[in-house]
Image (cartoon, rainbow, N blue to C red):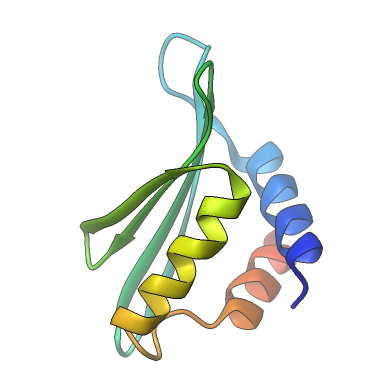
Length: 99
């Protein structure tokens, strides 16, 4: 899947499912992907400091990064450390389906 398509889908998912962090300056949306190899959690947060991605594997934080460039770099690393956990086409096709 192309990067622009991933961004479009995740942004649309965020707009549909975002929830406030309490003070209405921070908003988050979370996607959980359960596989036989574990659980991947993608958390997108938009707040005054910018767009942040918190990435978890089996409830353990693997990375917290700012912006899309850092997100894609972090997902390459997560894929290398946890083979067969992150299938970009499946994750974002499933995400698009629920929008």
